[in-house]
Image (cartoon, rainbow, N blue to C red; front, top):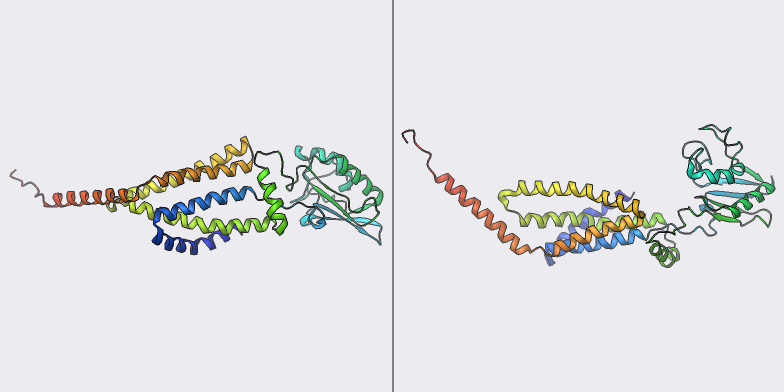
Length: 316
């Protein structure tokens, strides 16, 4: 959906920036697009899922009290099994979920870890009140995991009990840039109810506005700076630089992500774009066009001289 949104918006916005370039100049239109791109990268760092709070339906494991059976019935987010089928929540042997399995396995499944086979349906779909109390106690004692629990209805000491693990996507802490998404979430995303899906759609719209424009204006500006007689040569070099950037960008992201986290890695994109904007600002477009025209004139004169030279005769 994000890529589709980007491409749908990119086409008309390329035309809009083309009109803008006619009014303020190609270089200025390109720099405008690059500055907006920087803002987009900074804004992308602020994207964050809304806190779960009392939204029972957004918890990974949702327990609802059934008055008829006097038991809690489990509904998992996206209807995924706890373990051990395709698309399950908890890994059967992964080290990352080991502590979670030790603390919660008996409440969530019908078999022990050692007797469970991969691909087997072992999710415990109902939970009596006494076992629910045990699960609540485990929730309060162990939070070093990536899941969330919520109880609705039932006995007063269980109803409304909720727990979110420290590794859950809604918990944003520990990174150098985490203050930024937390600030934006508290002051913009949460007050206006803008969930992470809408955040990504907004990103797609804004990226689409500048992606096509930046690409079109950069080629337009480049075409003005190169001699017509050497277009193939220069655009070949232009394409090579583009391929190199496609390697350098992800490499910088990977290095920053490994050294820090993904949010800092996204900010490295801003640094690259800012560097490009600074270099673009130093380009003297008029001088470049004059130099390109001079090169074309020189090439034409050489061609005329070459055409006027008579080939040597056999006697000579």
